[in-house]
Image (cartoon, rainbow, N blue to C red):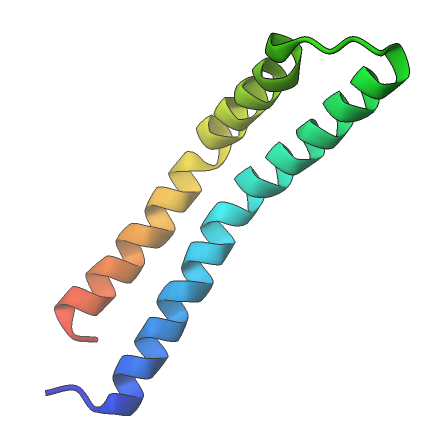
Length: 85
């Protein structure tokens, strides 16, 4: 039976993994949103598609690029947790 210290350490590691895995996608989405907002403010073009389409495309590209790394990290963590190590 795992100790409370081990459970806390595992939960902390899981939270850090969640942050590390989501940070590239969230960061790129925020940057794309900022650039689109800046473009819309300078050109005064207020189009719904222009506000969301670039962000969706950039997030899809980043997910395709970092997806294998994310999957490997999560699978390694899950394997270690479920094997008891």
